[in-house]
Amino acid sequence: MAIPQHATPCLLATAAESLALGHLVAFPTETVYGLGADGLNPAAVTKIFRAKGRPVDHPVILHVADLTTAKKLVSHWPEVADRLAHTFWPGPLTLILKRSSAVPDAVTGGQDTVGIRIPSHPVALDLLREFAAIGSGVIAAPSANRFGAISPTRAVDVANSIGDRLGPYDLIVDGGDCAVGVESTIVDLSGDAPRILRPGGVSREAIEQVLTLSNAEELTPRPRVSGALASHYAPRATTQLVATSDFLSAAHQYLSDIPPSRLGCLVISADLLEPLQTLGVHLQAMPADPCVYAHDLYARLNDNDTLGVEVLLIEQPPTGVAWEAVLDRLSRAAYRDR
Ligand code: TXA
Ligand code: MG
Image (cartoon, rainbow, N blue to C red; front, side, top):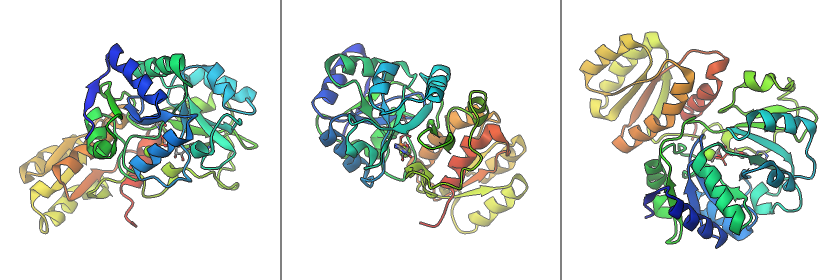
């Protein structure tokens, strides 16, 4: 069982050495914690898939500290990539580009494209720079959770999700809570026109300030994106999105089958708090701001899993473009057919 360790300069030096030796290092980014390995070492990358229980044909993204390193990983760097990189890197944006021969098949799942980003979390950047000094400086990292489970935004959630699957030389670097809380936005630049494959930390509106997105998103076949599976990001609890007006009656209905200690409720409306409090359920007031909501969401889902909640009712947030990433994750968390 790997235990999170505080991100001191000394630990980061050790972590860079671990990466260079082919071990795994879970580390914080501004979006979620990543489970990292040397991105140019196929044997190390394979360990990520084993630890997560992730199918080997699902590609992982590569993290780098600078543009020069990013460009070595692609066969073509289009002008639009420059614009996006200069506007949003370091930050929560992943670009899908045609890969160069430097990138192993283990990273891309055999596809001819690669996902790349420069994260903005200072611990992630320090680790990347340390690793560039003694190794490839390229860290392959999916989110540091079991395949299909909720992404971790706190080191303790990493330990709970995959701690027992890490080896004796693998590390969990604790850099505090992730500021953004949902994964990076993925923009595919490998086709004829740019398109968003996964909404995330950078809003669609912000991206549209920089480029014109394809409106033919559904016409061309999508690359395999595990975050695009309907049941991804699933809590263990049966999770349901409920309209504000139906919330209390839904809660009462479940309480005829299960005790209040097994029912979790995440609500935004202040009006719902008091009546739910009297029911004795696990109650959490959620922020009305979409960015703060995104920051809190995975932590609250993970908390409910830890508490052993059987049914989790989530008040339907407002619709609208600012809520796109949150609504995407909620609809997947609530997806039932598995
Ligand atoms: O915010 C994030 O992106 C976090 C942090 C750790 O950086 N990482 C993350 O990784 O969410 P992961 O593996 O959980 O999700 C990355 C997504 C997956 O859905 C994967 O399928 C997709 O990126 N992806 C990676 N390479 C790709 C490629 N060449 N083409 C299409 N999709 C790709
Ligand atoms: Mg993931």
